[in-house]
Amino acid sequence: MTVETIKIPDLGGGDGVEVIEVCVAEGDRVEAEDSLLVLESDKASMEVPAPKSGTVVSIKLSVGDSVGEGDVILELEVDGDAAAAAPADIEPAAVEPADVTAAEPAAPAEVEVPAAAGGQRSETVKVPDIGGGEGVEVIELCVAEGDEVAEGDSLVVLESDKASMEVPAPFAGVITVLLINVGDAASEGTAIVEMQVVGAAQASQPAAEPPVEAASPAPEPQQAESKPAVPAAAAAAPQPPSAAAKGVYAGPAVRKLAREFGLDLARVTGSGPRGRIVKEDLHAFVKALSAAPAAAADGAAIPPIPEVDFAKFGEIEVQPLSKLHKLTAANMHRSWLNLPHVTQFDDADITELEAFRAEMKKEAERRGVKLTPLPFLLKAAAAALRANPKFNASLSADGQNMVYKHYVHIGMAVDTPAGLVVPVIRDVDKKSLWQLAAETAELAQRAKERKLKPADMQGGCFTISSLGGIGGTGFTPIINAPEVAILGVSKLAVKPVWDGSAFQPRKMLPLSLSYDHRAINGADAGKFFTELGQLLADIRRLLL
Ligand code: CAO
Image (tube, rainbow, N blue to C red; front, side, top):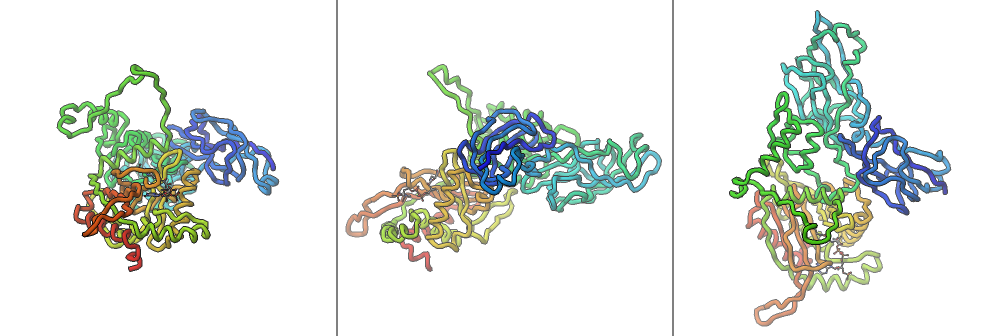
C-alpha cells in the first residue's frame, strides 16, 4: 500500500476558492471519481473528485479554508495496482469541465472576419471553448437583430445538464444577423451572431488573427451547483427554471443570488441595460416584499418572521445548517408556497398483507433481504398510479399543460444523518417484491453512506415517505414538486373494526396522501386512495 498526497488540481487560475464541503472523513473508503471536496467561488461550485480509489488516511483542510491549485487535500492510501503506477504526489483530474468554466482563464471567442469596409467590419461570433461540452442547449437569446451591444454583454445563455453559461460579446457593435435559436444545440465553434463592429481598434485588426480586444471572457456558469456533492432530497428532482425564468436576462451572480433567496427571476424587473436584472433589482424586490405590511395583513404577501435574540432567554448554541439541509429547506418552502396542498387521510387494512409478510419471513432470510411493508406499498402505489394517470404526471412549469409519464418511477424519502434524501426506484410496476425489497435496502444504505449520485434521485413521478418504522398516527407530507402527489405512511396499529356484527382486531396502516390541487381534484384523490387501500387490503389484486 502506498500513501499518496492528493492536491487541488488546476482550477484555471482561480485561487482563493472556498471549501464549502468536505465529502469524506478519515478512514473513509473512496472510489476513483468520488467527490472529495466541493469548492465555491463567487461564480461556481465545483467538485474535486478522487483521482484513485483508496482509503482516506488524513484530511489536510477544512470547510471555510481558502484554497488554490496545489494545496494538499488529503493523504490517500491507494489500492494495490493503482499505487504502483502512480507518482507519490498526484493531483485529481481537473474538476468537471462544466463546473470549472467559471474558473478557467478567459477563452478567446472564435471570431471570423470576412470583410473590412471603412471603419466597420462584419464579424461572425462563435461559441468559444466551453470545456469540451458538446451539444449544449441554447436556453436564452439575450440579443435581437438590430441591438447595439457593448463588449462583454451577454449574447446567449447555454445550459448543459451541469451548468448554465453566458457567452459574452467579444466586441461592441450592432447585431446584424442571429445565427442561433433557443433550443439549438451548440458546441465550440457554433456560429452565434453576425455583428457590425465599429471603431478604431477594429481598423487595425488583422483579418486572420483577432486582436486582444477580440478575446471573449470564458462563458460564465450560472447554475453550476446543479451537481451538488451531497444530493438533496427535493433537490434530487431539481426543477427546471420556469419557461418565463428562462427568458430572463441576468448574469451568473444574480441568478445565484436569486436561487439563494428562492426567487423566481421572472417576477423581477431589470433596471440594467436592455432590462438586464442586476443585484440591486433583487435587493429592491426582496425589500419591497418584506416591507409590505399592509399587503401582508391582507394575506397578499408573506410577513417575515421577526429576528429574536434567543440568548436573552438562556444559553444557546448556533450551528450552521448543512448544505443538504439548506437545499431541502429551500425546496420544501418552494413546494409549500407554490403548490396548493390538500392532504387526505385513510387507514388501509393490511391484516392479510401482514400475515403474508410473516409467512415470507423465512424465505426473505434465505434470500438475504428484509421484507418490510415498503415494497408492498411501492407495488400498490405503482398499480394505483397506472390506473390513475393524473397522479403519474406533472404540471408544465407555465401551468398550461399536464405532462403524463408512461413510466412509473417512485421516490422514497430516506432519513440520513446528513438530512433527507429521496432516491428514486425506476420502473416499480415491472419489478417483483423481492427486487423492490433488495433495491430499497440498497438505496437506503447508499443514501446513509452519502453514496447516491444525482441521477439516483432524478426522474421520480411520485414519492413515498414512510415514518412507519419510527412512529406516529399521521402527518401531512409536502409534495416533492414537480410531482403532484406524495404518500405518507405512519405506524401500523391494531384497531377494532366493525364487520357488521362484531368488532374485529385488524392491522390498520395509517396513510396520508397530499396532492397538488391544481393538478388533481378531490374526487380523483378519493378514487386513487380507495384503490390503493383495496390493493393493500388484498394484494392478490396486484396480479389483476
Ligand atoms: N408500521 C409498523 N412497522 C413498520 C412500518 C409501518 N408502517 N414500516 C416499517 N415498519 C417496521 C419494519 O417492518 C421494520 O421492522 P423489523 O425491524 O421488525 O423488521 C422496522 O419498522 C424498521 O423498518 P425500516 O425503517 O428499516 O425499513 P422500511 O423499509 O420501513 O423503511 C426507509 C426504509 C429508508 C424508508 C426508512 O429507513 C427511512 O429512512 N424512513 C424515514 C423516511 C423519512 O424521513 N420520511 C420523512 C420525510 S418528510 O420529512
